[in-house]
Amino acid sequence: MLKQALLEEMSISAAASDFCEKQEEGLREKFQEIDRIAEYNQWKVLDAFQKERIAEMHFETTTGYGYTDPGRDTLERVFARVFHTEDALVRPQIISGTHALATTVFGLLRPGDEILFAVGTPYDTMQGVVGIREEKGSLADYGVTHRIVPLTAAGYPDLMAIREAIGPKTKVVEIQRSKGYDVRHSLSVEEIGEIIAVVKEVRSDIIVMVDNCYGEFVQEIEPSDVGADIVVGSLIKNAGGGLAPIGGYIVGRQDLVELCAIRLTAPGLGKEAGATLGVTKQLYQGLFFAPTVTASAVKTAVFAAAVFKALGYAVLPQPDEKRCDIVEAITLESEQGVLSFCRGVQFAAPVDSFVTPEPWDMPGYGCPIIMAAGSFNSGASIELSADAPIKPPYTVFFQGGLTWSHGKFGVMKALQEMISDGVVSLP
Ligand SMILES: *Cc1c(COP(=O)(O)O)cnc(C)c1O
Image 1 (cartoon, rainbow, N blue to C red):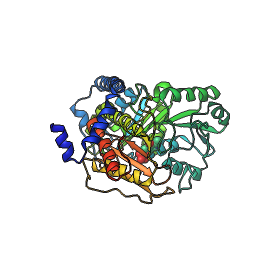
Image 2 (tube, helix red, strand yellow):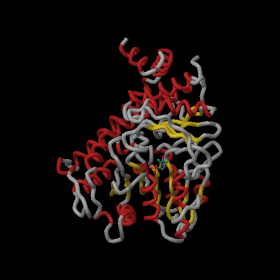
Image 3 (cartoon, rainbow, N blue to C red):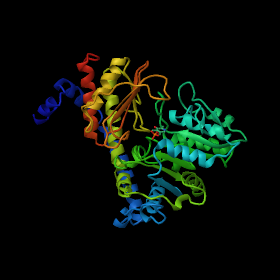
Image 4 (cartoon, rainbow, N blue to C red):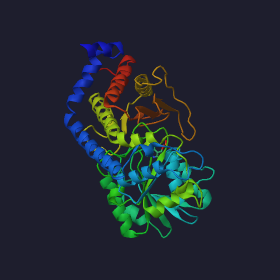
């Protein structure tokens, strides 16, 4: 068979590929559900493009101040339509998800205010932004305090404790949709809606902000559909569809988006300035691709869950569980397991497939971290990638996959490396 010969050429054994194919057979219904969600989201994005009458002129670009940039302004209206919000800030000047989140919290909070983290300690880089971990120029430096409500022992939002933690100084409540690099359940949009209802019942003027990183287009609704006032994410994750080379978005209430824009540029300038430097078309086309690219990443995560669960490893979420983001956590139980898995992911990449990833002491982490990614856009984790801290229980966080066929190959290659290194044998 052609396929068998090619896989052999690419150093995947027939035993490994047969084992993987068998796991895929059990996922047909799950994949249909993922395709149905992608279909709805594709039409939602298409409708927004059509309502805004997108034409070739919108792909033109600006330099310098960028005072008049219809492509940029219309892209922001498209985002606002997709997320059903009053306004949006979508810019290549937002350098990452962390920058989008920092722009939002610095835009919204003033000295004496408090930010409440409703679902445990936030994502690593946010800890520095807020001053949970000491950093120069953090919110704490500006007299903004924070409070963290831990998850319940079972790892779910603690609604009672959230209600009680809201005080007179609470201005913003932050909800993180994705698990990030914690082994906990990611939140569904419905669960986010329940938290928002509790917060608004205590005080309706509290601003609810959602870190939507890794969550966009995984469900048919977004946090802004269940009452979030402001929703924030990265364009080198789901919402950029693998085509955006840089950027972040902030969508929500018009008055709040304006405060964020003022923070990003300058008081008096706000959304009026900011050249797009030639990337506008990639941002449009990336958003257009985002629903199906996200579906490929979700299929890859589900497939990895099925394959590694069948081998006896702990996986989160389970293969048949409802998906809330694109991340799969796989606990490989040994350092060698993590190293072999990550090498497999790297060797499966279209770019830098010849590179061997090694653990290193990344600043801000308590142990060495290994990162596997051979991506078109540096660090883009909507592209197939794996990261793991080198410490027990040796959990690897696996995400991305621009196409399902590539994601599937990446899982097979990771398994093959583990087999070749003697970490695991097929049942
Ligand atoms: C990726 C991510 C971020 C932001 O990370 P950047 O690398 O700065 O884009 C924030 N929160 C969560 C939950 C994330 O997954």
